Length: 313
Length: 98
Figure 1 (cartoon, rainbow over the protein chains, first blue to last red):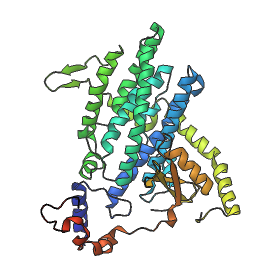
Figure 2 (cartoon, helix red, strand yellow):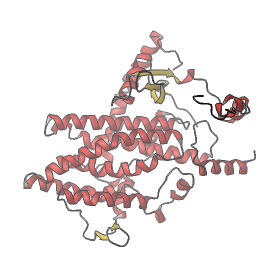
Figure 3 (cartoon, rainbow over the protein chains, first blue to last red):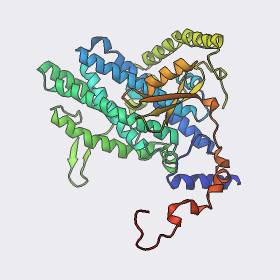
Figure 4 (cartoon, rainbow over the protein chains, first blue to last red):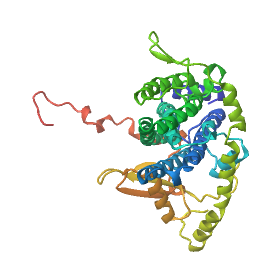
């Protein structure tokens, strides 16, 4: 097959909703697009453990602490599912981590905001995980098989995350005036960053078209953002919290909510590394990755000495 | 793709059995340095919500697979034997329970 035909056959295969598997032929750009997207997704899960970890020792009850621990363990697990999916494209775990540390690979900029009060843990579960799961539900149909399977597994677990977050928000919003104020403060600070998680408007997003053509992405950024807004605004009303957007209104004609302009300058600033916690998040990851080196070395030495390992290390 | 040193240990493929009597299905993979670590990592990663009553881990290197570009000719011999299916056969009118 000449190379034009290969590209054409590949596109046809994707258009017929077949999944691409690791050993299938794929264009280099498809491979790189997937590595970039899946690894960014994996890094986001792992870095996302930090703002929540901040509250483990200060959770207000044993119940809350156990739930938070289970949730953070899930996030670590999601990172591992996704790293495994990325590795099937011919990149090693060490390379992926190296790319995170060098800044070549990104993670969701939403995790560069601090968690200032307990309601922030609620806001992360409800809004940040809520936004993430909106994107992930759509990505279950992504064209790369291992990524799609990781998404199905993750979506099953994320619905617990979103509900536990909403429960925290509901409790605080209907609690004492001080608790209500903390809940409102949390939604005031997390609402816009959550909307930014879907990325720039499709017209300003350079990679959207390739991603959609190859069905790596299954819906545009704006469409997904709208889905999230439409389901979240009524949830805020139910628990008596205000969405921090004076221009928010229901459009009877389109049957969708309309929002005010998103502050893209802030978004780009945080992506560039100038958010409130960027350097702290990276320093923490680098530090603990280096601290764990002796564990990896000891495990390799033990396996070599005891010859318990049926495969070459 | 250039490979740097691998500090994560080899890759193991993970198979879970949801209920006894059901087939084991592929769940994903884990890195581990030996069998014990592999099965424990697989438990922690793939069975946090009662997903399994059985668990296998297999060194990824030990799996033999048909390469995608060889798949068509490899599976070809089963293509033209429609008499292997019950629908191939004519059943006389009125015959029941067959």
